[in-house]
Each structure stands twice: as C-alpha cells, then as structure tokens.
Image (cartoon, rainbow, N blue to C red; front, side, top):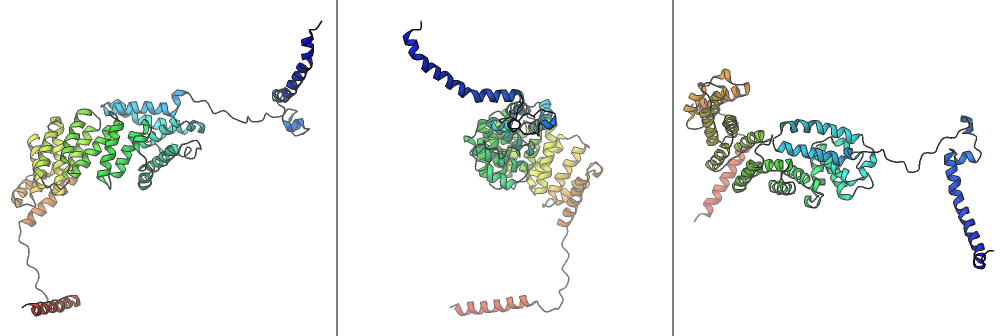
Length: 426
C-alpha cells in the first residue's frame, strides 16, 4: 500500500526528475564527446578527420593554463635575493659584489624566459621595474608594457624605467619625475627617488637633494641610502652648504664605513670638491683635513694627490699647495708619489708671484717616474712659469695703414658726443 500523501507527490517528483535529466543531457553528451575525442564538425558528418585514419584531433582548451612557475622563480622572489646581496655590498662584502654582477645577468635571463601571464601579478611588475632601475637589462620590460591588468602607476613606472635603461634621459625624467615616491610600494619608493635625484642633479641641484632625502628616508640601511648619500654629499659641496655637508659626511662615515664604494667615493669626492671655486679655501681645507684623518694612512697619500691634481687643473692654488705639501710629507723620498707631489706643488706656484720657486721645484722633478699625462702637466707648467717671469716682447711697429671703416665711424661718433657734452656744460 502506498501512503496517500506519497501518492499525491508522485507526479511532482516524476516531473522534477525528467527535467533534471533533460538539463543534464548536454553536459553528459559534451563529456562523452571529449572522452571520445569527437569534434563538432566530425559529428556533423565531416569526412576530413576520417581521412586521417578515422581519428579526430582534440580541440585546444578554451582557457589554456599558464606554464607553472615555482614560487622561488617568481620575479618578486628573485628581487628579494638581489636586494639582500646589494645590502651586503653596502656593508663591505667583496663576495657579495661579485655575486651581484652574476645575479643581474642570471635574473635578466630568467625573467626573459618566463610566461607572459606571470606579469599579471603586480608584485612581479614592481620587481622588474626595480631590476631595471638597478642597472638590469631593459629588454625584459618590453613584453610587459601593454599588459591590460597593469595599473596606471606601474605602467608609468615601467615606461620610465625603460627610458632610463635605454639612456633616454629626458623621457625618463618626464615619466619618473611625475611619480611621488612616498606613495609608491615600499619596494619601489626608495629606488625611484634615487633615480629621480640622479636625473635631476644635472640641472637642478636643490631638487636633486630633496629627492635624495626621500630615497634615504624610504630605504634606510640599504645600498639605495648609501648611493643617495654619496651623490648628495657631492652636490652639497658644490652648492657650498657646509653645514649639511658636515652632517652627511659624518653620517656616511658612521653608517657605511666599509662600503665597497667608499674608497672610490672618497677619491671622487675630494677630487670633485677640489675643482670647485671656493671663496673661502681655508674652510674647505679644514673640513677636508678632518675627513682625511678618518682615512687609513696608506690611502691618504693617493687622496691628497688626487686633490692636488684636480685643484691645480681648476686653478685653486691654495688647495693645490696644501694637498701637494701633505702628499709630499707622507711620501717616501724619491718615490713616484713624492715626484708627483712635487709636480703639483710646482705647477700650482707657476702662475703666481712665487713662480721662481715653482720653476725650481718643477726642474727638480724626476720626469722618468712620471706618466705621460703628468709629464705634459710638467712641461706646460714650466712654460707658464717661464712666461710669467719674462717681460713681454714689444709689439711690432704699427704700419701706416688707413684705419678700418668701423674705427672711422666710431671716431666720428665720439666727436659728436664730445660736442654735445661741451654744449650741455654751463
């Protein structure tokens, strides 16, 4: 016996099951077709597939899967490793410096071989921008520029990084200069500010100094801060901001004393500053002496010579004499450094009232120990000292030739002016 209530529900249940079966039939048919490799045109009676042996090729999937990329190979993970190595360089690791060069080449090759879909992850887009702004090959950016999922800010940064990597300075400044570093992702903020400062330093020192301040603020303790400090100190010296110059040189010595760039930076810094035309050379000398005392004695001679050379070429006589004298004191008598110190000391004096003393020093220099450029400096300085100490030859007697027309017109005009002045006088 069927319960009366159940009997009344049977028609409804039957209708529901029939409807569900009809709805499921296309899915079952499609699944069966895929399992049997049946294509729609083959089912319709197309003989093309049959001519290939009775089997029809499988259709390509509608949504192809991207090639799998392990997490460790994702660009944002590669850049994490690169940044770690860069910071070790700022701490003075020679092995890290060598490793960085190889890493830049390897990362560039790895990024070039990644599937395009990888760049739909904004973390990877930021990573490749960082890579190129760090000196990486800009070619890796080209497949990414027109990805539809890239946000406006990252798209501008991509194009700016490409222009920077390709050496298009004006385009790079136009694109990157409009970005606000403080609003960017932490990965990009510091390095974008650093590049902005580097580009602006050629034309606007004040603006560049502000960019370097941001770079240091956004990336403390990193190679970015170290590079920003180096460039900022040179600009401050050039601009004569001695107070901030003192502050940042002390900060660099305290924070990055072992940086692998510290040695070349010191040479670049002292030589670069020596080229400037300081009104108060004594102020610069006292500051230079303070900083040089922090340098190992073995390195100090080379720095003094670099200062003396650049100051001599720049005509900063007091600085050249000071640096050459210090180098002479610290050098072993008769050594090449000693001969170079005498060279720059004598050359600095050649165009001064003490030219006689300068000439005497220059003649005592052992030219056989000098490189060709130094020999040219010596020859030029001797010629200058000789010219300073010699009375000029009298000019040749003027020939009785008619004055040029322009001179004649000027004399007529002067005559008219004199006449007017005489008429106006009481």
